[in-house]
Amino acid sequence: MSGLTYESVARFAQQAGTVFFGLMFLGGLIYALWPRHKQAFQRLALLPLEDDEAPHA
Image (cartoon, rainbow, N blue to C red; front, top):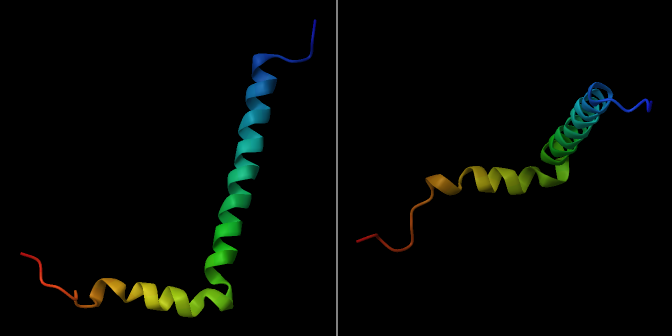
């Protein structure tokens, strides 16, 4: 009988998914905290507070 059982495949998928999404989270965190992007994020953070150019009807 093969060593591939449902339990072993499920365990591998859970562990691989955790590692994958952990790396994706770290990549996003590094991107967001990289000093080169600070000015753009500060500008975008103030965007909701700016007045609209044309009033809505």
